Image (cartoon, rainbow, N blue to C red; front, side, top):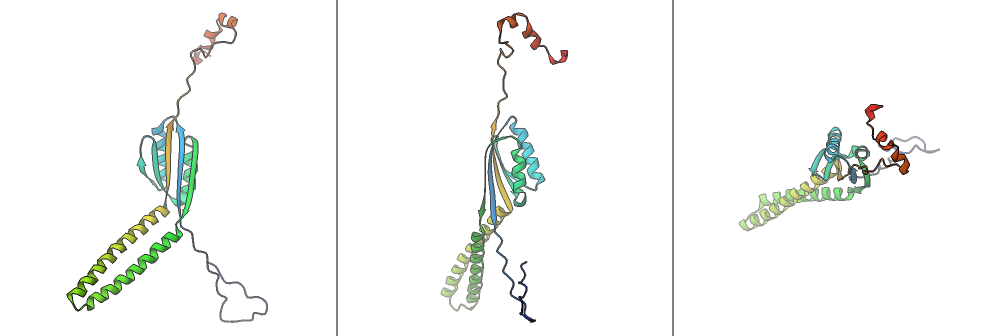
Amino acid sequence: RATGASPGPGAGTTSESAPAEQAPAQRLLVYSASLHMAVYQVDTVQQAALALTERLGGYASRRTTQQLTLRIPAEHFRQALDELSRLGEVSHTQWQAHDVSEAYRDLNIRLQNALEVHARMSAILERAQTVEDTLRVEAQLARLTQEIEQLRSQIENLSQQIALSTIDIHFQVRQHAELPADDYLLPFSWLNELGLESLLRAPEATR
């Protein structure tokens, strides 16, 4: 919380304190990221990613053989991204923080206005004198009720996006390197004739 500035020289004593500086409004951010990585065993890496997600208090919202979508608490976004990047050979990483502060405030203002109008219309309905007036006010109330529910749903959805970051991981299977059939062929033919090739192929256990 910001405090007021100390009075300068000659300010004297007074019962009124200097006005406090208004603290800047906290920004509301929605974090998202995309990882492309190559791994030898997709299922094994996915299990490790799921275990990490659960440890950080998140969950998987989508899983296929080639993709994993994770929802992780925003406060652990950077940590999760760092640890997930170590699970394979990452070829591409992209992340962003989208500021939704204005949109969130706008939705709440619209909701508050709709609730106030709904309250006024409800009071008018109680004073309606004719059937025509009653039907007209009820139609307006029904429209306002629907708008209020939509606004509440949008606010809830945006709140979830703020609270939980989204990380998409795209997997590509890495192929194990295969040695060519003549991997032990020596560069000079006369060395091969000495039978050194068979010695090089001897099992490790004979050492």
